[in-house]
Amino acid sequence: MRQMIIIGSGPAGYTAAIYAARAELKPLLIASAVEAGGELMNTTEVENFPGFPEGIMGPDLMERMREQAERFGTEIVYDDVASVDFSGTVKKVTLGSGETHEALSVIVSTGSAYRKLGLAEEDLLSGYGVSWCATCDGAFFRKQEIAVVGGGDSAMEEANFLTRFADKVYIVHRRDSFRASKIMQQRTLDNPKIEPVWNTEVASIAGTPESGVTGVTLRDTTSGAERELPLTGLFVAIGNDPRVHLFHGQLDLTEEGTIAVTGRSSHTSAEGVFAAGDVIDPTYRQAITAAASGTVAALDAEHYLATLPEDLLRVAIGEEEQGTAPAAGSTVDPAGELVPQN
Image (tube, rainbow, N blue to C red):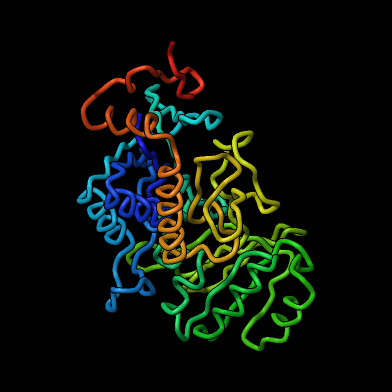
């Protein structure tokens, strides 16, 4: 048994690990077997993360975070979580390999996934003109012609933001009216740099990693007719999905589908379980806000651990460091509770 397990290896997870490891909690961080590092692994240059005035590549930033977490004693396992049990004082996390790890506290930092169009070229051109974050990548498209796909508030916000840089922003939408709020629709339609493209979907994306995006093929959703539209950038704003499938029935969720936390803290509905990063954030979804959230989770978990009975803490600390058994006169029952023995 351990003092802490961290599920997820994005900015929130690695930052939580750095803080927890420096507090000598010896966290186990479970990174995905195929998506370790989170969404920044699919990003090229990151210019808005403090401390890197010349910018840094997304994978390089995550590698530095990983190295820093390991430097202070974080153990990292590259596997996927198959199931969790947060019902007892001792939390159980089972991996795809079948191995089960136990801990007195868990930090959930599984992030969220941007919804994709489902086109074959989407992943190939990610970071080469295809983006899911205007705030992250908009400045790379100064004086260019680009498009946003979507019809909700997020798409309107992305399009209006992008007009700060681009000369022309198309909004490609499958229907003949937007789903966004009236005020956001009006602001968008009043913007002279924005042109809606109604009843239309993106059928394919042209370009290579060497050339970047060069255009898209648009398909009319009523007639099926197709046409080409030259572009240098395509922003997909059709929503995102927090990665919470493991926690249904274990943790309370918000209306947006994120994990519910108390106020500005990281406390979830399960005692001893904390959450951080995009999995609790339906609004900002930035690397720096996720990292800050990871700090909060680590500090909250540290304070929680300090409230637990000393005998229970000795079980975790002893097994981690020396492989010792529970304190004399006590044991841990199957539900993860410390039980005195007569």
